[in-house]
Image 1 (cartoon, one colour):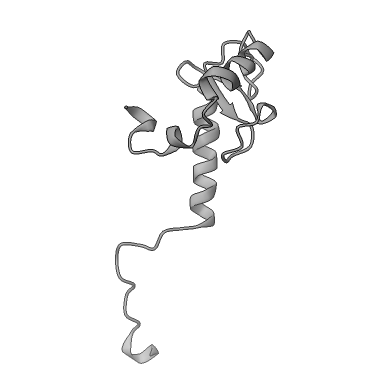
Image 2 (image 1 turned 180 degrees about the vertical axis):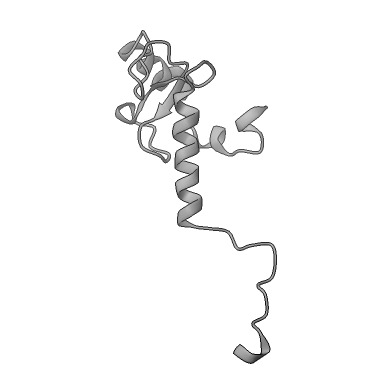
Length: 103
């Protein structure tokens, strides 16, 4: 396991029929793997149209990831940045003490 799958639980969350039914059905529906993000052929990654664990065929389509224009990477990065802005982590440094005259 390497790359984005390292330390991830995504593989365990896939439905049992992912390889045998869902992925082949997505290929049959879109054999040229037209990227749902840019409309160009050659999508190499089966992507969720809306984030989450909805693995229904209506929510899955192809996107570029390993080859330019890297549509899926840009989409995932934007989703991650939005989530981080919505739920910021606390800083590592303790906040400065207020000036004694302003306590």
